Length: 247
Image 1 (tube, rainbow, N blue to C red):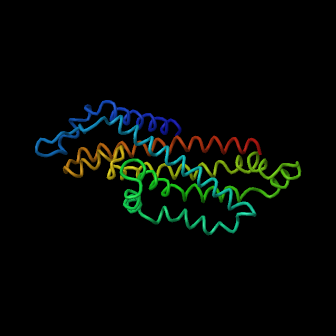
Image 2: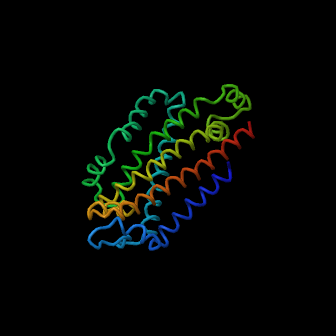
Image 3: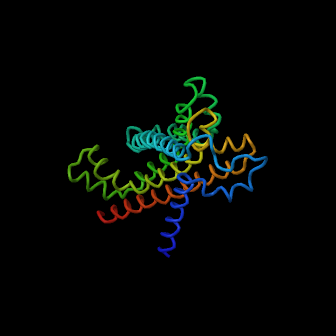
C-alpha cells in the first residue's frame, strides 16, 4: 500500500502547486460557484505570496510555542520544578479553552493590528499538545536508563541533553505535529486583524458571497495541513527509528 500513499502525496503536492502557481487552470470549475459576474479566481493578491506568508506565520508561532512548551516541560519534570506542574498545565490549557478570536480582541489594543496579535493567539493555542507530550515523553523514560546515565557520572544537564531529550524526542515531535497542524487552520483568523495569510482569500469570499474564493482558500489550507502533517510524521518516525536503534 506504500505506492498508494506515495501517489496520494504527489497528487496533493501537485494540486497545491497548481492552485498557488497556476490558479487560472481552475477557472472553468470555479465559475459555476460565482454570481453576477464575480471573478472566479482570487484577484486581490498573489496566492503564492499569501501561502508563503501563512506558512511563515505558522512556522514562527510554532517555533516559539515549541521552545516555551519544551522549557516548561523540562522544568516541571525536574524535582525542583515538580510543584509547578499544575500551574504550568493550567496555563497551557488556557490556550485551548480561550478562543483565539478572543485572544485577538484582547491583544489588538495592546500590540496593534497585524502579525503580533496573531502570533500571540497562535502561540497560546499551540502550547498544550507540545507541553503535554514533553511531560509524557520525559516521564515515561525507563528508570534503569536514567540510573545507568547517573552511574556513568553524567551531570543532570548532560543526562537531560544526551539521554532524556533524545529518547523522548519522538513523543515530543508528535505533539509538535499536532500543534502545527492545528495552527495551520487557526492562522486563517489572523486576516481579521490585517495579518497576511490565506485567511484573506476566505474572508474576501465570505464578505462578497463568493464561494469560489472560499473554496480556493479552504482547499489550499487543507492541502497544506495534509502535507505538513505527513511530512512531520516522517520526521517523527525517523526519530523513533533512531531512538530504537540507539537503545
